[in-house]
Image (cartoon, rainbow, N blue to C red):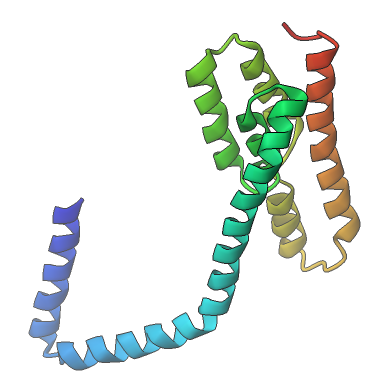
Length: 165
């Protein structure tokens, strides 16, 4: 992969030399434009970083209570929190549960229930409502989060009622 990047850079230099384009001035112009976009995007990126750090602290705080009260692994709680945001993240967590406990273990079955019973709510709302330019999505968002929570509750009910084994 690094050789491919090196070839692309070399090709760019050769093309600029062939077309007699001032490489240094174009580079400086590109850096100035990049800094302009960085200053526009920086507040939202900083907020996202802060949110992720606060979220991880919240998960560790809730996780200690969760493990003591429900006596199931923290990975299932992580799946419940990340599934409405990212399907790939929850699949990675589910694979980690499969690798650690095995496919036929009770926790793996609970993770499968959580994975199939919930949806990536934020992705669905942003994609479908964004494609038709509809701004009134609050009821759909709350309903999606409620159904994600309901799948988590059903998973716990199946666990405590012994409906999965």
